[in-house]
Length: 480
Image (cartoon, rainbow, N blue to C red):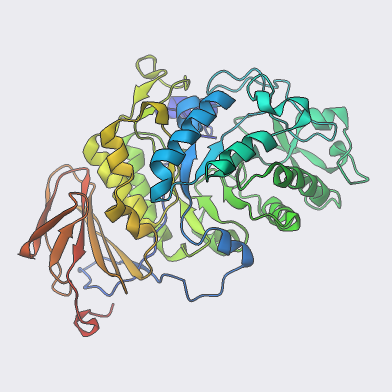
């Protein structure tokens, strides 16, 4: 689920959480030796590659990259629209690493036509209460075939197939007292009717203490595995309440399938005190509430990047949410009258550069939210810049340092040194490179070499600079 398209407190109460959208975060890896400014406290973390990981961490050794249907189509994506976008993803984005195509919320709701949810709408379920693709929207699912035919098409494109699901059991299945597949229990016996979602009426939670609770998740994920699902975004589970026991049941259920399904938890903000549990059970988790194209949300997301810096590691990634670039909101009808429906992103080009720089430096998953059928050349060049995307994959120690102007990022590893300045202020940031950093040699966004001896950079307001630095002996780097 994504929140309201305008990010306003009034709209956020409709479909996001009740109250204003909570601006918040990203994730980062931090910890390059650095000179500390007086009164500033940088966030540190190591690459984590040397740390022993859990088996499912191997399914996302680098941050997942791909496309999700929500920002453009809300709850109403059709099979034809999904396939059109998946083909473009495969043709134009797969070469640089974008390989997950995800059907977002309510693919089992035949009457969904926008970003609005119809309260207590009838859902398409099987005889055991498991949601099924609505055949009027996904014709290949007719005859009880589910998402298997669609997943097969996506796999032939070289992509991974992703779906969004809600935590818990459909209330409809609970009311009908449907039997759980392969279990002696029924849906009503394991449900927790008091655990419901604030913004969607489809589901209620399970009672994790009931012996049949695992049976429900095991049966549901077994079906997802049979369909060929590779990526699962589970919603209403990470915030405003962290449902740790249901997270654990889902982890067990995925592992029981034997299929490597990447697990994403949503929405946020997750809390740093939950980091160890999140790392032990999920491949990625949201560190912000639903992220839309407003400057306050972007600015606040950058702040949480630093806060989450120590917690990112291979296979377990704090997630700053989808990228609202290009053409979005085709059927998203939240917000003030002037902002209803289809639009180009409201971020300026400088703000989009800032966003992509931050997501890449922090190694947040990169999930596009736009309608790829109407992709413009500037956006394509922005999100496929190989010199920027390289930061998602390079090992090395990383550091975030915050100041009044914004945030400085440095990554030093065996492949060299990167440095970035992210200006969250309203004036240009004229910055002198710290003495322990070698000269800036390459402007990654311009894809151009810099003059020899470059030590001073100017960063426009609401924008970023990302540079590769010349080689420096390890002894020249100051220890924090």
